[in-house]
Every structure is written in structure tokens, then in C-alpha cells.
Figure 1 (tube, one colour):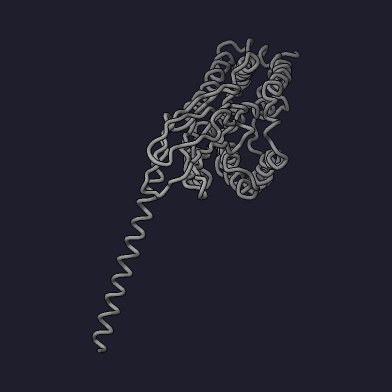
Figure 2 (cartoon, rainbow, N blue to C red):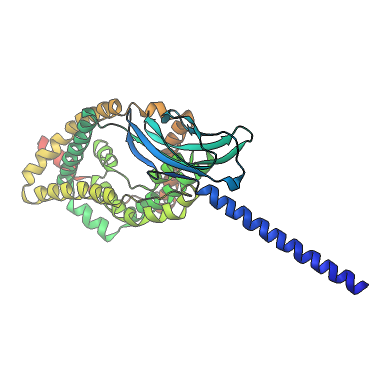
Length: 387
């Protein structure tokens, strides 16, 4: 009898295992069936211009094996109705058995990224099928003011970089090459400290993952030409500033993909992240070409370099004022999408980076100067022009 009870227990255990496996397989088959019930004419809606509409066709297949014998409806909704909205066929009846062919129309309202959700329900049950992974991205219509702003920025960068190249002091360049402590510290602060600071701020604030990724991307970018402009206007070491900007921009081709791969994966699950290599290279050429041209003017036409350096400051002031005015006007829409917490973080990032970088610089140099050579070529040229 004992052996019989043991045998019966084994049979029951095996039967339970078979039932569990069969149940799991049926659930997986049902999930696979549900995931393939709804098909679209296009996988997503990308770069739809504001105020434009697009109609997407779909086919929905429900089988009798699912046990649906009542009236069914398909409901399409937009997750963020500030970005876009479904304006036609929001809720439509569908066949509970067989395939239903239909469409829905989406209106682009404001720049941004959102998603559409789909829900199928019947009159006698709750939700039969749901999916919320249909991506919609909306872009702004390019305007004349936007094109004008881009041209102003391009002219601004080229003119100022030519002037900076004409202000480069060869003696300072030689000293930087012999003792590259300052560029090394600058590269470390810009390409290591700033990405870590931006990542820490992104993890500390409660904003969307796209904002977090944007914050990390900003922290991983190299310093732009604006730092060179303010260095020149404030009588800083323009030669050192240009050297650091060019070095950081070149190194960013490797460091930005690294940081976005290592730290950005926390914010990019399920997305296809693309590194803007072309934009980085174009930005580098915008800087390097005019700087070399200005440096050539200084070497072969030193009198021209003196005149360029003399008039560069008022030109920079005019370009900065016009650039800010046109830039703010052409990008007023930004004020509709930023929140107080995003504004706060935007102010915290440069200041937090400044505090950390200043601490590193102070501990590295122990209060000593970077070099004992001439301050800037701009000072010498300006004094020469005055004489």
C-alpha cells in the first residue's frame, strides 16, 4: 500500500507539471496572438510638422477561439494631447470575429514626442487588447526667422574665430605645447567631471527620461565658441581658450559615445540612440578653418591682424546682442515646454560644474599661474594699434 501511495503521488506530481507547462504555453500563445492582432500601414509617425495631419491605416484581427461573441470597439488615444491628438475615428466598432480594416487621423499640435494607445473592448467584458507603444514625433515648420538665426550664428562663429586666430600668440602656443597642464586639466573637467555632474543631476530630479537624456548630452558636449568670445572680451588667455576648445571638441568624438553608452543606458531603454558625429565634425570645422585663416593672417599680414584684433571687440558685442535677440524670438516656444524644475537644473549644471572644476584646478595648480608668458596677443595688438 505504501508503494501504491508513493506511485499515486508521483502520478499526481507529473500531472500537475504537465498542466502548468500546458497553461504557460497557452498563455504565451495567447500573448503572441494578441501582440499580432493589430497591424499598421507604418510602424510609427516620425517628424510630422505642426498643424499637419496624417492618416494611418490598420487591420485588426479577432478570432472566434478567443471567445468574443458581443459587440467590440477600438479606442485610439494620445498620451500627450499637448503634442498631438487623434481627431478622426477615435472610437470605432470592429468585428469580434475576423479582420476589420480601418484608419485613424492624427493632428500634430506642438513640437515633442508622444505615443498612441489602442484598446479593444467588448460590451460584455473589459479590455480585450491594449497597446501603447506607437511613437509619434512632431517637428516645427522652419520659418524665415529660424533660417536668419542660423545664418547669424554661422557668420558670428566664422568672424569671431578669424579674429581669435589673428589674436593667437605663438609664444604662448609654444609654452602650452611644452607644458600642457592647463589643456589637460580643462579636458578632464570638461569631458569627465561635467558628464558625471550632469548624470548626478539627472538622477536627482524627477523629470521625464527624455529630459534626463538631454541633460546628460549637454554635460557630455564640448565647450563652444561662446567661451572663447567671453574670454576675449574679458581679456583672458584667448590662445589657451582656443586650444582647449579645439582639443575638447576633437576628444568628444570618442568621449560622448562612451558616456552615452555607459550612463545614457539608464535613460534610453527601448530607444535607438544616435550620436551626432556629423554635427560634431561640422562644428569642429567651423572653428578650426577660420582659426587657421586668422592665424595665417597674423603670420603673413601682421598689420591686418592688428586691425582685426582692434575692431573684434565691438563686432563681438554687436553680434552677441543681435544673436541673443533673434535667438530668443525664434525660440519662444521653448518657454511653453520648460518647467520650473527644468529651469532650476539648467542653472545648476554650469554652476555645479564650475564649483567642481574650480576645486580641481586649485588643487592641481596650488595657486600657481598656468604660465609666465605674455597674457594675450589681444593685449599686445590693442596696445600696438593705440600707438
